[in-house]
Length: 240
Image (cartoon, rainbow, N blue to C red; front, top):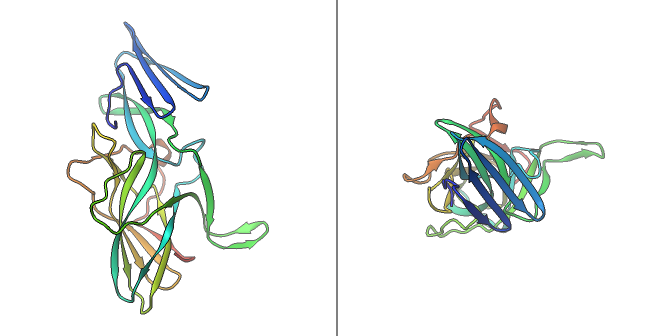
């Protein structure tokens, strides 16, 4: 569960996590598929679980996520439709002491971590656009969807401002302004609401909007994002 203080042991998927408390320190150990991660913490720290962006395993390459839809979403001229997507997340283990925190371990919860270029290839040695973590998701129009385990539920309002039908097959998200929320004591995870405005047949603006639920707790900012420029929107210039 997210927001869980690990006092003894925890098993998540193929990962086994154990925290041992001694007189003046804690010992953290995680084993998974033969890989072992260990850390020693002072006695004032506690270890807690959090969801985190599926961007940091095996290393941090990009803050962008390209979500490819399993089926297209088709909108008539000047119409709108709200869909829901399940975005993969990983499990983070943080050390906390008061208001201070430090990531000590990351547990990957998915088997395939792929990347793609969003943008045009100019030549064999040059390209424009963004390198993004590639994920696939099924768009669902029903409002009763609950977050799947190991995923964050994302609600996207698609607004077609054009005078023609629009066929939407993907959305580019920037994780830096995209906030993650969770309900402590559960595996429920959400992102803030998103608005995708279709401005033309090739251009869409992605806006990051409201907190998804009152009882949600916001995820602390990852270390990799600190000091980076945050934009209010993501501009998709090469189609959607």
